[in-house]
Image 1 (cartoon, one colour):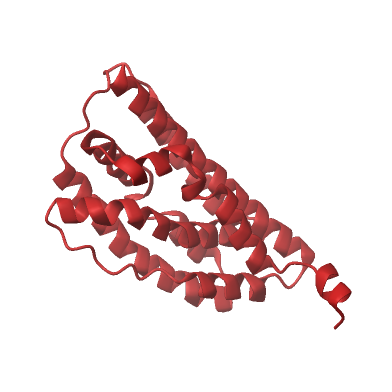
Image 2: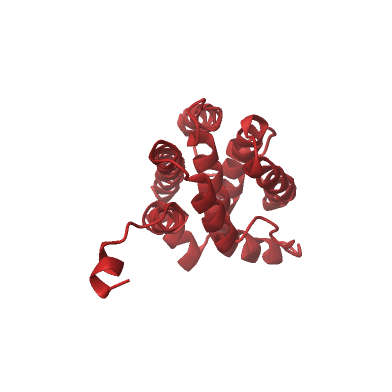
Length: 217
């Protein structure tokens, strides 16, 4: 292959998914970066509270995708769902130990918005468009470890030893995305599902940022 051919070669689905995660994932949110740089207890309590509200109950994003998957992706998603069950237990414990959410008035509507957001996550992960739900699940698994950069220091502060994150690593997610994108239609659906997942997560970060601003007033 010539240098020009290498330059012109299409980017595979796995690399596109990783690039999308880098530009639209958790770490791209301003409030994520604020917590990473200077996490205050009220904001940390709010974060784990919201994570529990969005993803603390089963079935979740990966569970729904696994329930409708077939072939090689079914075993992969089943394993990822089992791994996320441990993450679910982890955020539940952090929510309890971090204490109650404070500094937000009773007439704040962000929790109701979070419940609606959870419904949107559920709807996306139950999509009947082939590749869409799997793309959302892959994006979710790929992006979750970035949250550990905030959650694990909180756990240690609370006297909790952070458990090993058993979700598939980036290379595994990339390889599965590559193997599943056999047709352009499936590849487009996967990227659509991943993009929608990231947009929903950014919606959650906007809610958390708005609540932080209320506390500061």
